[in-house]
Length: 138
Image 1 (cartoon, rainbow, N blue to C red):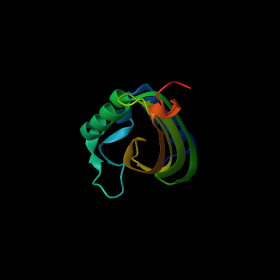
Image 2: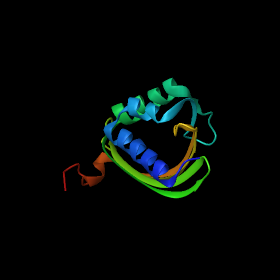
Image 3: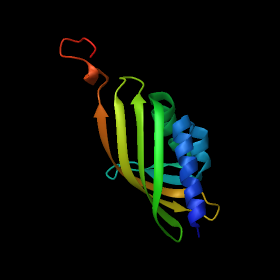
Image 4: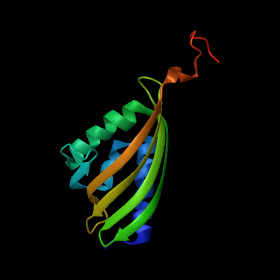
């Protein structure tokens, strides 16, 4: 059974790995056969290699200036629930992205996540949003 302190520490490690764009730090907090459900209608990513690839392509290679905060909502045995917010700039487009969501995580006896689900909403501001219609900077 996970304690509140352990869940908060796990959330901090998750956030730090995202901010630093570190796929190895992410897989370290997941069980080797973990299921990672990013989208409710898509099959989960399963295992370290799939999770590592997702975080390398997304966070490490695709995002800059990342912020992350999480607040636990509830803990029930081996399951933790938290509200989180994040923001970052997309490397490819320069768009600014703000996210808010809820996560549900189920843990093994070693404190590693074995099942992860998240539901989130996004607001994305294109890099050109600060330009006047003529293309000049404001």
